[in-house]
Image (cartoon, rainbow, N blue to C red):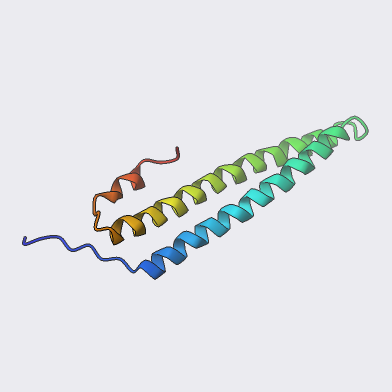
Length: 103
């Protein structure tokens, strides 16, 4: 084998990175709205005989999952942006951060 050639379409990978960034921003906003709703439901739990508290717990679980997904999207966005930058500089060893997981 004479050598390995690594090619990348910078525009396509850049757009995918931006897409993950957009998803992160939207998920973060949803998480903030859910946080406000959970606070309101917990505050009104006394008046609703516990129904609001049960809904608050349910929404809190969703909020946690949304925030975790936002972190994953952020990680993907950053990793892809770094990969493009590294590839442009000629660094083909940059692949190491794709297997690291969330920080």
